[in-house]
Amino acid sequence: MTEAQPKIKMRGVKKAFGPKVVLDGIDLDVAKGESVVIIGGSGTGKSVMLKCILGLLEADQGSIQVDGQEVVRAGARVHEEINRKFGMLFQGAALFDSLPVWENVSFGLLAEKRVNRAEAKDIAVAKLAQVGMGPDVGELSPAELSGGMQKRVALARAIAHDPEIIFFDEPTTGLDPIMADVINDLIVKITREVGATALSITHDMTSARKIANRIAMLYDGKIIWAGPTEDIDTSGNEYVDQFIHGKAEGPIKMAVRA
Image 1 (cartoon, rainbow, N blue to C red):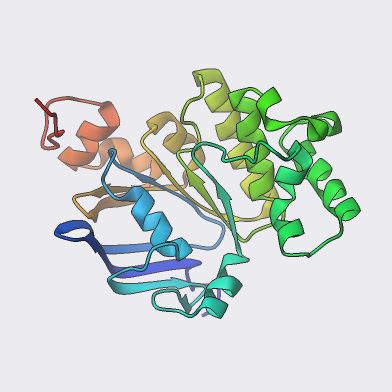
Image 2: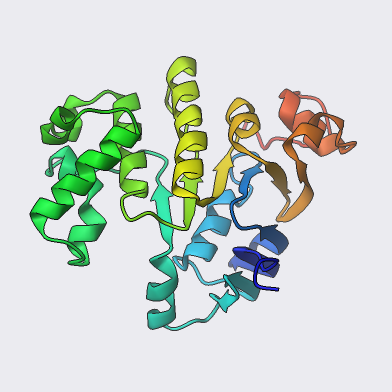
């Protein structure tokens, strides 16, 4: 029974900001060890969904469970306990300019006083090695790194405490196609090595196809299609078809300001 329990389970999740309904009854399961990618256009609520799981936003209705533990309206102690299972790769890397790379990687461990500084540095060097970077990089400042290197450092930070679940927020944004492919390869490799469950949000279909076991599409506040990655080209859903092929014509109408 425990094995069948999803790592993340969402049922009827709703979230609105005033009259604007962003999430309108999200149902989604993410199994242990699975890599699920949520696709959808800008402003469709992908980031809001992620923030609701992380507890950064409170869902208005519905249930979000992590390993069977309820997140919605949970207390601070429960959130703290659940959040220890999470690693996060932020869209813009979100590194601290004032800290050297190794301190960025081990920031969470140091902040929670899990290790001393010498141990933290050893862990940072090991995690940097996992993303293909030498110990010398640990002494640099983020400003000395290219965009691709910053993203790799951010990935090393996301896995610093060997999380059970890693969230990837638009992992290839701002990268050229070759570096994007490097990051995609690293995501696949790292999640396998760490044995983590992955939930990603992106509108980059090349990335989605590479890192996902399963893809779900968010549109108009709902998951309108979900299935194995290899089935997405034959989904039979006109919204999915329009999105994955980037067609201007179709049921999805983009809001264009005059």
